[in-house]
Amino acid sequence: MSENPQKLTPGDLSALMCARICHDLISPIGALGTAIEVLDDPDNADMHPDAMDLVRLSAKQASAKLQFLRLAFGAGTSAPGFIGLDQLRTLAGGMYAEGKVSVKWDTLVEGLDKTPARLLLNLIMISCYSIPRGGTVTASITRTGDAELIEVKANGQKAKLDPMVTRTLSGKAPEDGFDGRSIQPFYAGMMVRELKGRIDTNVDEDTVTFSVFLPKDKAQDAA
Image (cartoon, rainbow, N blue to C red; front, side, top):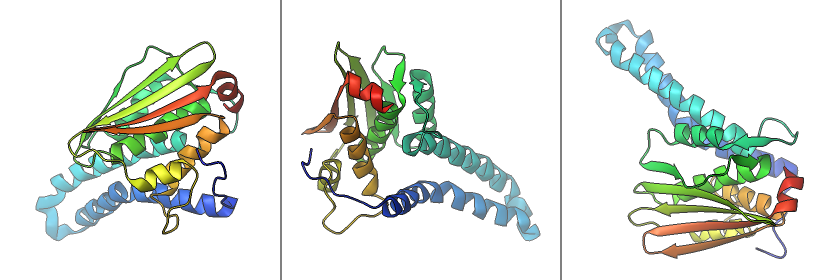
């Protein structure tokens, strides 16, 4: 991790995170608007059944994305909390249900404290971008006596790790400045530093791996 991470004002961070959320929601919301335009046009009555199918699909996608992003980026409240594994499975499954990526889980733990849970969801997002042609993302959580180990592996054809992701995870600004895409791994790196942890990345043929070591006491304090 960077010894001197980039500093952002609260206003800049908020604006960039809002841009990130809008980027993820624009597709289903835009499709919803298009379908409603078709339904409002009496000359396209023969297209109304297909438009209604698009309304249902787009509304479902928008709802799933909102629920995922609400926890990944905000958790809804500043109070400490514990997020169960079933909830994390449901959120990730809904977020990527209609895409080319399948999210799997390889862990027996019951869940995570709130901040590590948010970090895990962010790592799943980054991992999915590492396999643009689709594939499988596998999340695992291991607990030892004094640490939590979170590992997320993205496996797929032409898997790659964007240098921007490595740079921003470590707390550095992208060479061409932040935008809605680059702020998300930077935000994930912020959480790792908040938890006094360490994140390592590795690329091995068609697999990109993100490994996070979190001291147990710090992870619990930051939850």
